[in-house]
Amino acid sequence: MRRLYSCLMFAGLMTMPASGADWLTDGGNPQRTAWQKDEHILSPSNVKGMQILWKLQLDNKPQQMHSLFPPLVIDHLKTSAGDKQVAIVSGISDNIYAIDAVAGTVIWKKHFDYPEPANNRPGNDDPLCPEGALATPVIGPVNANGQRPVYALAGDGKLHTLNAADGEELSQPVQFMGANAKAYALNLWNNAIYTTTAQGCHGNPNQMWAMKLDDPTHKVMTASPKSGGLWGRTGAAIDSNGVAWAPTGDGRYEKDTQTYGNGLIGGKIFGDELKIADYFIPSNWSWLQKRDLDFQVTPAIFTYKGRELMVTASKECRVYLMDPKNPGGDDHQTPLDRTPLLCNEEVNFASAGIWGSMASWEDSKGTRWVLTPFWGPVHPKLKVPITNGPVTHGAVIAFKVEEKGGKLQLTPAWISRDMDQAEPPVVANGVVFAFGSGENTVQAYPELGLRDSSKMRIAASKHATFYALDGETGKELYSSGEQIKSWVHFGGLSVANGRVYLGTYDSILYCFGLPGTK
Image 1: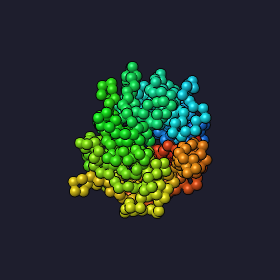
Image 2: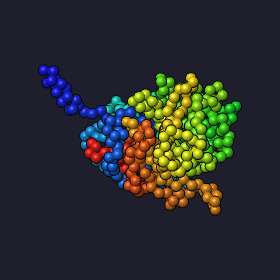
Image 3: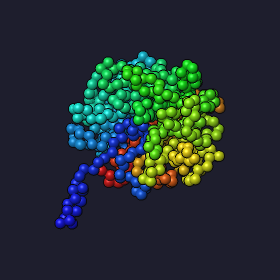
Image 4: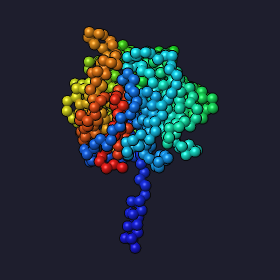
């Protein structure tokens, strides 16, 4: 009888639907850790067998250097064609696509139509300020009608709420900001949408933005650092107290006037206002400003031994460890730890340093890891226990969060192989997925001086390469080699259910995984 019972139990488990994984926001969660906790297919032991499961050419037209943004993934979505695993992909030319993640086909497409904004710039060649929809959408929880909302910001500054199942509008769009603002990835917390803007593009201010989704007046709340631009790649990261943290880029710091350039601000909703609740400014902010070494990396927020922590970085090429409850101590300038220089010995403002966002995960032994990409050669004085070859173009470096002598610190653990402009990684089941963008990042030339030209950079860009690395050593387990034909600018990776996604400049969406993945 016991044997029969065991067999029946086994058969029951085999027929139960597997619980899958979602990726509902850029960076995987509101804290922007880029860690997929629910991956059970890909692992360090099998990723060497990865291949391109499918690639899909989309009809999105690139603008300047931008094209596709990181896909969002819903594991079980009820559609007219049945239960589907769906990837939601946004393109800069005001396009949203729903992709069947198994078949690699388009389920629906939504294009946002609106009159041409007055601030469009004919012949625009500026990679910093393209026209169009720049913010990665965010997917909300199932509503009372059983629908899954997709919140997307169009190029005219209107916030749309789409039904993930068919792309239809669930409510009237509302004006969130001006047209052609350079907005970054949307975040969702406690039924409020957050984003950030930078570069003052097309006359729009640089600030943090928020809107309560249940506010019938659709009041737009903002908080400004009064200097700099908030251009962390994945927008704001939100801690457990509802404080949205975002870097402020090149700017000045003046405590008396509450001016918080070249640092990190924490915005929080109080009633119907978004206010700066706290901030951090690096002690060498003035030096960073003079050399255009922006504090511009979206933080990752995580817990270590029950304590919430936060990490961020800048183009100077240092990583900062902070407590979001008191990020800079009494003077707002003293972090828990600051690493030595990881790269950028030459103080290059355009093609070296740390760009984009961070990642953090915890392994089965309870070790807390922090990851950052960087561009350019590794700093010659940096000492790392495990290396994986010489680094000249960029790499991913991993730290362990440790407590020594009663103080928390980031201890270097490994550095990856060389990557052509390493971009922010994502982590799943002990595997670090990363890529070199292949993008040309030169913004100044001996014969021309400062000239950041999309046309010149596009012509000189190469191709992206996707990698799978061992999460504990950084060892290369898989490389896409020459299979990806184009490059990436401000795109990114997403991972769920045995699939890793990457969109390239030519508007091709790649899906990597193991053969036979369903």
